[in-house]
Amino acid sequence: MVKKLTVQSAYELAKERYAAIGVNTDTVLDQLQKISLSLHCWQADDVTGFENPNATLSGGIQATGNYPGKARNMEELRADIIKAASLVPGQHRLNLHAIYGDFGGKFVDRDQIEPKHFESWMKWAKENGFKLDFNSTSFSHPKSGELTLGNPDPDIRNFWIEHTKRCRAIAEAMGKYQGSPCVMNLWIHDGSKDQTVNRMKYRELLKDSLDQIFAIKYDHMKDCIEAKLFGIGAESYTVGSYDFYLAYGAKNNKIVTLDTGHFHLTESIADKISSLLLFTPEIMLHVSRPVRWDSDHVTIMNDDTLDLAKEIVRCNALDRVNIGLDYFDASINRIGAYVIGSRATQKCFLQALLEPLSLLRDYEAKGQYFQRLAMLEEDKALPWNAVWDMFCLKNNVPVGEDFIADIEQYEADVTSKR
Image (cartoon, rainbow, N blue to C red):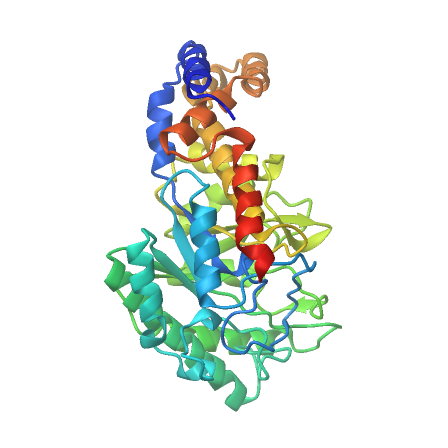
């Protein structure tokens, strides 16, 4: 176990080292404390939800692996979320999908969901220190098929329009109840496995659907629209592409969601931040780790996530970027996956905040590019981990690898008995 005195001593040395390059680590700790992640409820149960216990995933979504102990009901899911959050420093939000309503054991179709089906979530969240975010759910339903909001069949399209309208009303109720805007994300899987000769038609329908959905203005929720490059079964054409949603968001003042798994693997998500901030009100992030494709691996502290965090800080946009997690790994301990991904994301933002930005920009303004590159390289070796350990200590969560034992104990006591 990491000793408190060791953490404090290491932090004092790191504080002095960072001060030499103009960075106040105490200020950075205060800034990091204010960054809330939106934890995704679907990591604990492999995106099953409570609508239909026998439902299978569709719409290009897969949760791979069969590690034992997944949450089987609302009580287990909530217990797992509380356990995971207790091992992540800071105060965070919780992101729900529409299929996670409290339906009382009865089937409620998606065009019939109401705020009352999420009242117990609102109360539970308030009691446990969470603010809620929300998502419409177009996948894993008999009417999902290949097309939902872009479907030429008016009965199917109207079904999904009604569902999404109701999701916005639920998000509004959540935001009003919790005194903090609920971020409502809209993602659909619409697309085609093979070539289509009707690209414009489906996008015209999607645009019309969105116009209907967003007709009512709300004060306590934020609308986000999420693009995707492709999905399984929709490899050749995606109706809601990045270009489509970028244009729609810029024109209609909507938040564009950037899911780090929804782009080409060689594409820089970080490079999109400064452009989006010029034309849209805010940005929503879904942070995951694609391996070969949108495989939703657990987020780790890699260059992609670090570059993303640094660009947000360099744009001074922490107050305009909503940070959510979106992965579902069923091959390892699910609470462990929560904690690894959450802490890795926070570590990236910590390193971004510790960057000697004033010094770097001074070098750049003077054309001192050797000095700029040298400082960027030296920054990688500075003792950021000592600052991270202090952040964990101040938040009374396990320091370093100590959280592993906590999760192993929870598995022995709780999840292994499911």
